[in-house]
Structures are given as C-alpha cells and as structure tokens.
Image 1 (cartoon, rainbow, N blue to C red):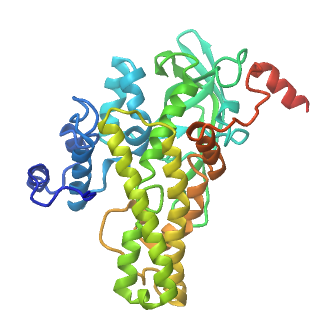
Image 2 (cartoon, helix red, strand yellow):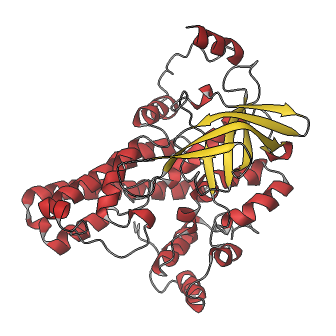
Image 3 (tube, rainbow, N blue to C red):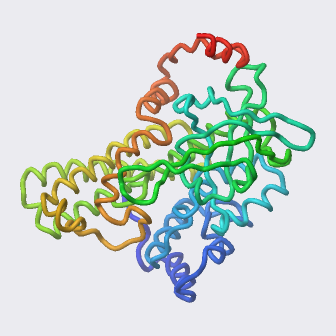
Length: 398
C-alpha cells in the first residue's frame, strides 16, 4: 500500500499550484475565500474536500512558502470553529467565522484555571445572567495567544446547583472587553511568551455570545479537545508543528553525525516512531473519509506524539555537541519550510517540555485511553454527582 501523497503531476495538485503561483503572496482572506483555509469544511466555508485533497492543499501551501492558516489561527481552524457549524446560530457563524478563517481575528481558548488544570469540570470562573448579558468573573491560566487574540472561547460556570460538569457553558468573548486583564507568563525559551494569565473582573458579555445552550459547555469542550488532539498529532515535534523525525534524519545525514553508531541507532528508533505517527494520522484520515467523527483515539495519537517530539529534539540538541551550545545554535541543518516560531532546533528544544503538559497531560491522556479505548474501569470520583454549590463549600471549609 502506498502511504505517500499523490504524485507531482496529479491534476488536483497542479490546479492548486497554478492557483497559488498566479498570486505568489496571497493574503489569508484570499486563501479563505478559495476554501483553502478549511478545505474539509462544507461550502461556503471550505470545499467539502476529502482528506486526501486537504493534505494536497496543505502540502502546496507549504511548498509556496506560506505559513498555513491553521498555524496562524489554530483555535478556530483546528479546534473550536467547527462547533459553530453545528451548535452556533447563523448570526454567530457570519460574525465570527469569516474573520477567523481570514486570520483577521485571532482566537484563544480560555479553559484551564489555577485550581482546575487537569480537571476542567472543577473550574470556578462564573457567568451570571443579568437580562440581555452575562457577568463574567474569574481567572484563566496557561492561555496561548491571549496577548494577541481578539476572540476568546470561554468556558464558565452558569449553574452551581447541578454537578460540576452539568453547570458549564461556553461563550465567544471579545478579548478587548473592559475588565479583562492579560499577564504574560515568562518561559525559559528567551523568546516572546506563549502563555498568559487572563483575569475577568465583572466582564459584560452579550447573551447572544452563548455558544449552544446553557449547560452545553462540557460537551462542547470535550469535542473541541478531541479535535485539537488530532490536529496536534501531526509528525512535527511541537504539537504537530516544527521539525519532524524525517527532518532530524536529513539533518544528521547532512552534517555527518549519522556516522556515529550510537546516534544512528537512536535516530533509527525515533524515525520509526515518526513513521508510526504518520500512519496513525492516515488512519484518522480513513475514519474521516468514512464519515466517522473524531473520538478518544485522538488521545492515543497525542499521547504518542508528545514524548516522541521531545525525543526528536533531545537527540537533535545532543548531536550538536558543544558547538551547538556556545557557537551556532543552528549547527544541525534544518530543511527549508515554514514552521513559525519553531524554525530552529534550539527554540524548539527549549519549548519541548511543554508538549507533555498542554492539551491534557500524559497522565490524563493515559486515563482517557484506559477508560474510553480499552474500556477499563473508571477512576472513582465521589464528587461526580454532587451539586457544585455543595462541593465548593466543602472545599473551602476543608
């Protein structure tokens, strides 16, 4: 079986290449209007493309030297935008999707909190309905892109009288609203901070910004996280972005480090892992071609991809030796390509500890796989059916 993309002379590829070459530097609005931002979405947003055509479009966008829209604005394109197709109103789709797909409005996901990182159901940010709007109060943590986002997908508690998962709702929030304060979290890369704290101090959100119905927040969040985990399971070392095991192998061959038998043995194992991930991605494509929704198997791919990416970058950094530390951080060659912030081995390496924490820690993912894929008994949760108002009183008093 051939697992490679269609050949260079495939008519679909040539048509897309001709379209992109006719306008060498298209903006993201042009790409969105052609359906290239989300080709697998139905028209008018995308092309209703099958997975193979979607991969061809992604491949040709990369060949043209364009940073893919899903890397520029990942939250609506990879994670949350499809929720509006199924659960949003016509007004919401018209208002939010067009500028999102054109990368004119960047989105962020406001999920994790200081007291509810791995357990999103235990979040404490509240949304209180008052007439035609909600009042939001609380804090979010580890929010990527918050410092540049115009729209935030917020999960907040709208009902404290029901168990923790049942009382959550989701909102599309204007990040420039009065009462929102964003504080960057400095990390060890030395580059611009990726993560932020976000504070909501009686922020007014219109009632028509509610996505779906009150109480749909948990269901929507789980659907979005599964979609995100699939998107983050591409072969790139950093959540599907950045260099891959194939590029590591190319770099080791180009600089001669592959001649070291220990390096060669380790590189071969990592390369095999990368190919396994590539085949798992094709399995996901097969599911989508057969109209199967994203399920918990996305946790399997993310669980495998995250430590694999760390191993790719660890070997890349070690193979550079002292020269890579004190002289030239790019001593290991990297093939040309648009990788956004992870365009050199050094930055990607310093960032790599985060990949086994974000979008579900390895421990959480192992639980998901055990319970939902292997059908093992669930971990007992004595608070699962307790109304949140009672649970929070017990927590505070203890």
